[in-house]
Length: 93
Image 1 (tube, one colour):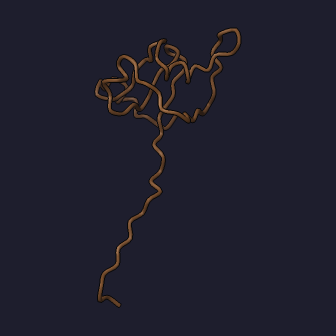
Image 2 (cartoon, rainbow, N blue to C red; image 1 turned 90 degrees about the vertical axis):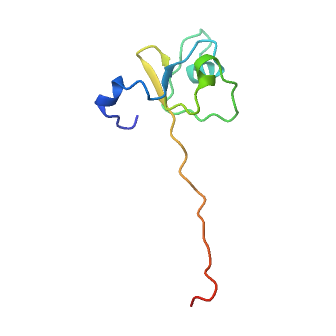
């Protein structure tokens, strides 16, 4: 996880939630094995859009989600901007 200022841990304005066990995002991040145990992966890339569930539907953007209470967190890292704008000034040399 990227560095987070410890003073921000009590800030209620930060968008982080404990996912509900019925959430499709929870199911995807939990990644259960055949016996139902959670297989934690250091990085997960979602290849499909998932329906929101519960509190997820009220947020514009999630930054940090807790999958298993006090043990497993995932941080959303936005992709770097890959589109650059160029413009030409007419008459310049």
